[in-house]
Length: 205
Image (cartoon, rainbow, N blue to C red; front, side, top):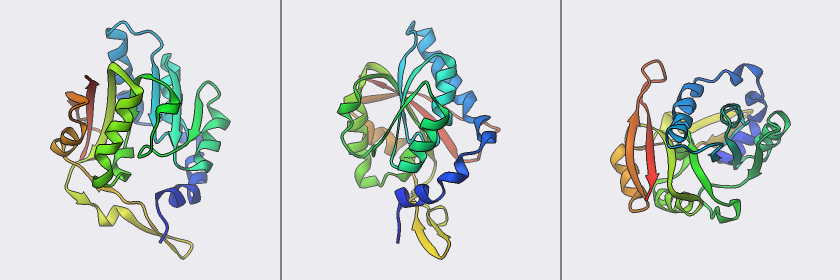
């Protein structure tokens, strides 16, 4: 059975869609970017983890951020590079060491945590902490629940089976794995968005 990387390489073309540029995440990303403005940080350097086709990176760039995106799918990175010229994109996994990317004022990890297994979640937060500056902000979104979501994980395309490894996490689980590098400072919920998703803002201690 093929995994997350194979799934997104297979479906990459579906994300190369002009309509996706008007994503719902723009409201979330704007609120996150405003946190830097309020702190007096101009043109913050932000890492977009699980950058996909680059639409979130594009939104952040439009606000004035200096953005680098990282994604496990080579094909999605190619798409992102093709239509977001003012950001840099690299192929890589958030569960692996990220030090070579440099340091950042902020990190966004929208939905990407859901593809990280619980045994790798603590290391993922350690990796993020190594590239985020002290006092820097981390935005994480997760679907509330417990354990692996079987319905969301398994899909068949062209006769091949894929395991997207979709995991639900509670705020308690995220905070436990983020400690001691991070402290939760805010939780957001947007009524008009898909039910069950929560957005957590952490600060690097």
